[in-house]
Length: 491
Ligand code: SAH
Ligand code: SF4
Ligand code: F3S
Image (tube, rainbow, N blue to C red):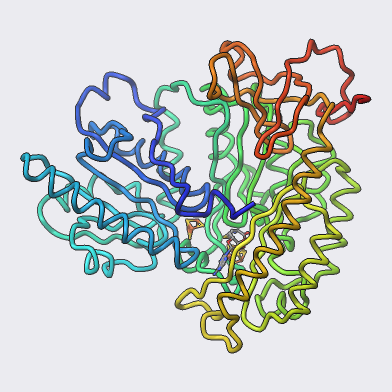
């Protein structure tokens, strides 16, 4: 595999669904907003909420930039390549804006997200077509900021005011519920206090803050009544979640998952991304106890070398990680493990890299994402000695990805002949085909009637493709195991 799809600028999502929270009569105005999303799932969630904020202003989402009165790039700063993509995209947007202006049409341009937070007004200096720069915690102010920008001033808003953002998210509770797709994200926590020495997130998203339990439960209930069957809880460091409950106590992620699993209609729960140090017993037990909690865990370790882990400030050893994986597998033997790896962190020797390869061999991942170390201005890693040359990073990345790809193939192949629950999410490429997701987050393609979209069905896995599994609707006579997930079949 190449790289983590949700974190690379190449895999932008341009179409943002029209607002779920706004009655159709409010959408009659003709202004159009085009939002392009880069980076992680938290940006995907934020982009959807931005279109929500703009809908009462008469903005409707479009996936045609040339048709847009407002273009927003929701950006990612995690690696140099991701940040640079924004500027090349702004170059293209300039031409579209000029063409529209010739035919007398306005086009406002906003940059949101982590590049906005990190670079602030530098963005409109480098790209004067930008009217508005808005950090990840300020997008709920978009309507006011837009009207300021329309009066001609360049607007830059990068305050950290996470409470205001969370309160705004919860204010949707009174609006009518419209239909939503079967699988959706729900941000429960933002920011990060870990300060890994390679990472910009603590600077672009600020300190770790959790939403309250009541806010989250209300949003999850609304999602369930809107047709959402699977909720993925999001946080930059989601298992550090420590939300306040109504009785004043503080809940961890395990307890929150237990509460959410009681909501009618929510068949599946997932969460991402976790840090090994915050993987507590209650969360591990929740995997064992909750049928709704899917047997998949993204638990990045970054490196298998103790020396590199230390210099990355990960604050655990490779042995700690092995012990943790053992406990998780003891509680949930069939869990699919995933991770992130960085190759070529400063000081990484052949032996350090070999330690990473050894860790991967021992853990056996179902999938993993891997990146060449990218020096990020302002992070401690950027100025460390012994930076690793690019060609060596590329060589190591290729080796690591070959190993992970082998493991992923083996994991996928081990599903052949099983019958598992699949959440049917949308139409497939061919007529009569639907695409869904296995409990282990693998895409599954199968022939099934459209009326089954949004339901969980027993599906027999009959073929393994390179990127997805192929299945056949099962009459449902198979016995399920305790997790309700799988039943291995002979042959
Ligand atoms: N909070 C999450 C996500 C962080 S960003 C976590 O802790 O896992 C996602 C991944 O990007 C990281 O896990 C890391 O593997 C990678 N990454 C972050 N900074 C990077 C950098 N400077 N160079 C290369 N990869 C990086
Ligand atoms: Fe970045 Fe580390 Fe925080 Fe993850 S835990 S967001 S890698 S600082
Ligand atoms: Fe990128 Fe910001 Fe997410 S830097 S990975 S969009 S938190």
